[in-house]
Length: 513
Image (cartoon, rainbow, N blue to C red; front, top):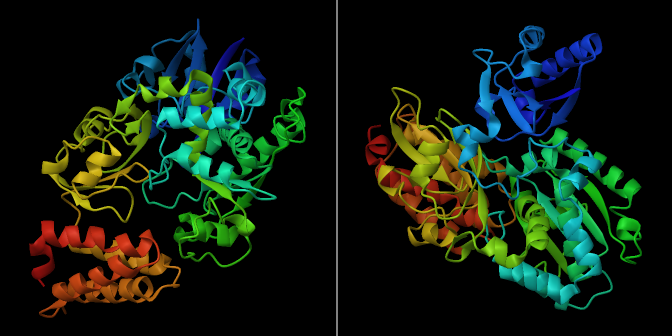
């Protein structure tokens, strides 16, 4: 009996995967000659809904299938791997989008049954946790993480091993591990893909972290707008608890180490992606930024030492402990070790998630993986790092995907989101939209962000409506100076960045009114 795989990730559901699932289940009942396996997404959103069949160990793909196509595909030989046009795309391992990638963190997404612990364990899951529990002590685990060179994938790029070391060295009656899944940057979806497609990698990474720092309780804070990810993680936690993957005696093999996890829903605010605002929300308060220091590693959740890592960071830990820190560090360039998940969105032929070693260029990612811009369109700008990232034009596309290389050109890599804008985008409208977003999402705790973002939005709106005045752009520059120098967190400090870069790169757009 053949295995037929269907991606049921949120991205594929949005374009009909639920209906395709219903059609496949109806045919499964009628024909009784295949098993339906529901997976996460491979990140190739331009191929969704994507149906695959496994033949002689190879996965063959049928792209952009609709519910009404399923019976015909099966009649014409999908289970035999027949070349059925226009759906057939051949071996998944050979399609250009996937062929050049090196999947470490996302190795299971779109490959194994999502939410099935037995499938995860059969694909090397649990090996790293057994090593952490029975072969390594806390200093040895942290040493492996430090050797890997892993830096936080949430945006700040802080060395993961150093953060863990700080929590491990801070005495306390209780410590916590918090997974930050409040992925609010427009154009980013890596955390969602992991939680929906490979939830046990996150849980394993959290358990390893807990052993390393001496924590016994963890929380997964998931963006409110991610109901499917939240449902999958709750299912995974319950499954893991029943199987001994979480609980009083991890793996039920006499480890003597207890660790459990609770799933919490986000507050629906962009600022709750900032670690201290997230902690406030977890404690049942309004999500507002705390002054730092003290840092969460010393005084975090409920005043206890707390590791807060991005979902993608924690899901990378099992591979590092399974293969070794040196193995991971052999990839990448400079101080940016390993691989990074680049999330391609905007005006591209092939949007999706790409996992590649650090060091490739932004141009290569956009053209070789994203397929370049649609025919007839020209590039206006690329925004990397979310709504706080600056706008980059054609002359900056040869920058390496590398935290430090981006810093050197005055930009940021952030969470790895890349949004491509073509010539149909009006720079003034874009700048207004980005600043209005910040004004709406500001927690309001500090005046520079609360008032500065609102006033800058009003000025841009006036210019947009043809009522701009002499000195408006200079006033925006003054507001930006105040926001950058005295905001409590990166939301206020970096909010002016894309606006100032838009004014610098496209001055005619701001003066024509």
